[in-house]
Length: 177
Image (cartoon, rainbow, N blue to C red):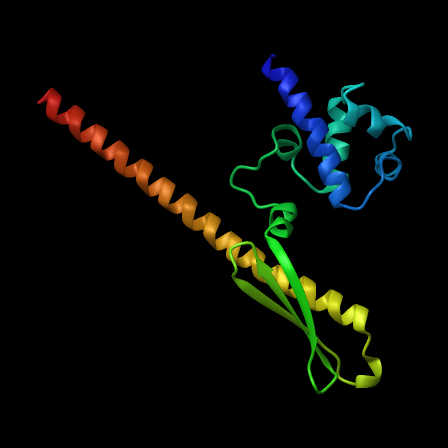
């Protein structure tokens, strides 16, 4: 099997995965992309191959990189899908005042983050809105943690590469002297 075919197979799976994660039907995504209703079905089954313009359009509508759609990974990037995949449990608590909603997210490694939402007047409290805002606030905490971890990895990789280059240069200089 050629690598070109494997990229198409990856694209088919990634397209279906991301579309479903976004809560879109095939026809919904096709409509948003300005494509015929059956287009996404054809792409996901491998019956058709996307044009470059359609690849770009689909990635923009789904809010993912082309690299993620075609290769299934994103180097030096964090996607919302990666963040959401880390969440294993969510719990909502309304504090006794009735004005504050707390969302606790438990991540795959057992670490927890919290988000909160509050209203000034209890008469304005809406449970669904409070939970939604608290959840998004907690997800924002994960972005910060994952961003830090990625930056640390990039820093360490770069530092290690620089050290490796210096060792090689040092050996070359010693050999030439």
